[in-house]
Amino acid sequence: MDTYARFPLELVRGRGVWLWDQAGRRYLDGMAGIAVCTLGHSDRVLRRQLNRQLGRLQHVSNLYGIPEQEELARAICARSCADRVFFCNSGAEANEAAIKLARKHGHMVRGIAEPLILTAHASFHGRTLAAVSATGQPKYHQGFEPMVQGFRHFPYNDTSAFEALLAAAEADGPRVAAVLLEPLQGEGGVNPGDPAFFQRVRQLCDAHNILLIFDEVQIGVGRSGRWWGYEQLGVEPDAFTMAKGLGGGIPIGALAVKAAVDHFRPGDHASTFGGNPFACRAGLTVLAEIERRNLLSQVRDRGALLEDLLHGLIDRHPNLLVESRGWGLLQGLVLREGGPSAPDVVKAAMDLGLLLVSAGPNVVRVVPPLVIKPKQLRKLVERLELALQSLA
Image 1 (spheres, helix red, strand yellow):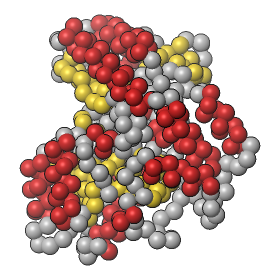
Image 2 (cartoon, rainbow, N blue to C red):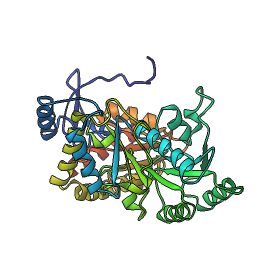
Image 3 (cartoon, one colour):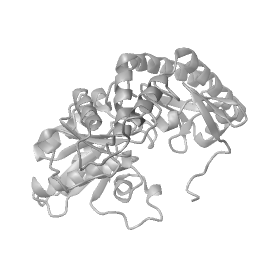
Image 4 (cartoon, rainbow, N blue to C red):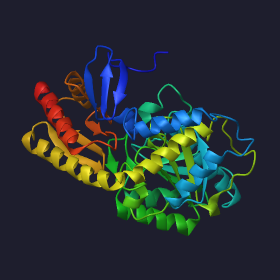
C-alpha cells in the first residue's frame, strides 16, 4: 500500500556501516535503519548466532517456557532498574502494553474510573491507535480521529506547565494514572530531557502514586552511551519500553517494569510472536556484543567526536545551521529557517553517498550504527557538509 514516500533507492547488501544498492554504489549509513542496526549490517557474530538458533528453534508459543526469553529478561533486568519484562515485536506494541499497564494501575491502585495519562508535546510513541493518541504531534492524528481518549499533553521540559496540568487534572480527586515521557525526544526533533524537569516529575509521581513510564524505544540499548536514557537524567522510571536497537535489525520490543508495579496477570496481555527464541537470541547477542566490544564507552567517545565535528560544521555555515543537540550517537542538526529543509538535506546527502533521516522539517538526525569508527564519522560529516554546500 502507498504508505511510504520512498526515495528512488533500493538497498541490497550491507556490511558494517556500509550499504550497497543494485547498481553497486556504496552508501555510508548514518541512520542505522532509524536507530535499529546497533551492530551495523551483516555482523559476523549476530549472523552466526542467528544461524545457530534457526538450527534449533525459531518459534513455539508463550503457552510454554522459552529459555532464550527468560535469559534475555534476566539480561535486561541485570542492566537496568527493572525486575520483570514483557516481550512483543515493536516499540508501538511495547508502548501499548505500557498504556494498558498504566490504566490498570489507575483502576487498581488509585481507584480511577477513567484514568488519564500525561504525555509531552512533540512526543512520538508509535502508530497504533492508542500510541498515536499518546503522541503529542497533531499531524499524526489527522484522518484517524477520534483519538483514543484519556491523554493530555504538555510542553516537554516545562516544569510549570506540567505542575499546572497535573494540579488541574487532580483538582477534584485522583485522575492521573501515569506520565509517559521520552528521556530524549527522537522524532520530535532530537530534544534531550532536562534532568531538573525529570527529577521534579519523579517527585510528583511519587507523591501522588502515579506511574512514571519512559519510552526508551529510540535512545535505549546503548545509543546515548549508557544502557538507558534515564541514566542521563538521574531518574529511575517505574517502567520503560524498548525496541529498535534491541534486536539489531530483528523485530523485538519489550516493556520492563519494577516488581511493585507489575499489575498484569495471566490473560491481561499477550503476544503471539513476542519473545520467540529467534528474536530473543538476537537481543541476547546485541547485549553481549555491546559489552564484549566495550561499545558504551566507545559511543560516549564517538558521540563527543560527532558533537565536535557538528559544532565545527555550524561554525563554518552559520547562515544555514543553528545548533546540534543530542546524546551519544543520536544527534540532531538544527537548520536555520528560510534555508534548506531537513528532507532537502537528506536527499542531497543521499546523492553524495550518505544516508541520513530527518526529525521534523528542520532537524537532520544522525544515528549511525554504534560500531562506527572515528574515521567514518569524519567522512560522514564531510559528506554532510558537501550536501549543505550543494544546497546553499
